[in-house]
Length: 420
Figure 1 (cartoon, rainbow, N blue to C red):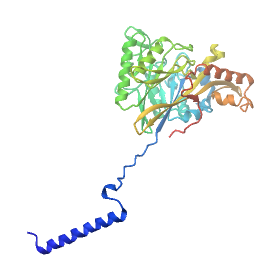
Figure 2: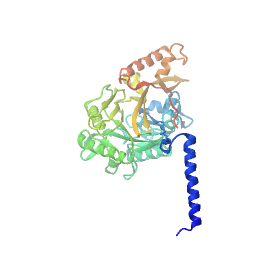
Figure 3: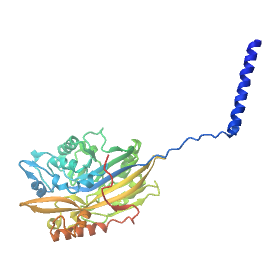
Figure 4: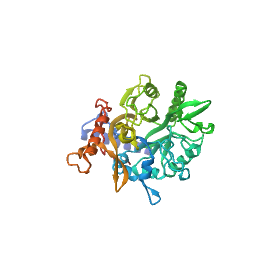
C-alpha cells in the first residue's frame, strides 16, 4: 500500500502539472490540438549529366605515316591540335581505330593492310579520347599477333577498348560510371562472306581461336547474330548499364545513304533498348536521325556513318570530296536523381574537315573544326588560301544536308562543359 506521505506528495506533483498545463494553454492561446505539426522538408536534388562524343574512322595511310616521321620518331599530335578542345570537353570520347599496332618489325603500312606506329595511340590520348573501338574490317590486318599487340598498346596507354579482347573470359565491352550514371559501350563489325567454316574480315580468315575474341556479325546469319547481340545488350544491363552506346562498322563504302541492313539493324537495336548508335565504315557521312521503338519505347539516336575523322582519302586521291568530311557528334544525357529517370538532353555536332597541305616541303594533316573556321572566313585570321576556304565551306554545306533532327535537340557544338 502507498503511505499517506507518499500519496500526498503524488497529489502535490500532479496538481502542479495540471496548473502548468493550464497556464501554458492560456498564455499562448491555443489548445494542444492546435499545436502545428512540422512537416519533413522535401529537398529537390539537382540533376546530373554525362556527355559522350564519337568520331568516325581514324586511318593511317602511307603518306600520313611518312609525314610525321622525324629523327627516328613519330609524333601525330599535330593532326589533332585544333580539334582537341572539342574532344576533351566530353566525359567519354570514342574513336574507331581502323588500323592496327602490329609493331615496327612488321613494317609500317597503310592500305590495304594497315599497321601504324604506336605513337598514334599517344596522340589519341593527347587529343582527349578515352574509349577506342578496335573492331572493323581491318582488325586482322596484322594477324592474331597484331590483334593482341594492338590491345597491349592501348592498354598501356590506359585506353578502354571495345570490340576485341585478349582472352575469352574477359569483357569486350566497357561500363563507365560518370557522375553516378553508368554508360555501357560495345562495338561490332560486319563480316565478309565465310570461307568454309571460317569467319572472315576483309577476306582474311579469322583463326578459330580468335573467333570469340572479336565481336562481329554476318549478313549471311543476320537474324541469328542479332539475337547474340541482344544477349550482349541484356548482359550490359544486368551489369548495371543505364545507357547503352552501340558502335557499329557497317554499310557500303562511299554511299551517303544507309542501306537496308543498316536501317533494319538500327530498328532491332532500338527494340533491344540501345540509346545511341555510332556508325562507321562508309568513309563518308550518312544521315543522323532519332527513331523510336514501339516494342521497347526507346528513343534511339542513330548516326549511320560519322565519316572519316582523319585519312588520306580526298578529292586528289580517290576523286571524292565527301571522304574529307567527318563529324564530332556529342550526346548529353540527364539523370533526374529524384526519380532516377534518364533522358536525352542535348545533341551537339561539330563538322570536321581534313586539311592536307605542305609546310617546308613536307605534307601535313590537320583535322579542322569547320564551324570555327567558317566564322573566321571574313577576316581569314587563319591565313588560309581561298581555295581551302571554299573547300571548308563546301564541306560544311555537305554535312548540314545530312543533319536532320528538326531542331528538337541538335545544335552546333560549343565548349559546353569541361569533363570531370
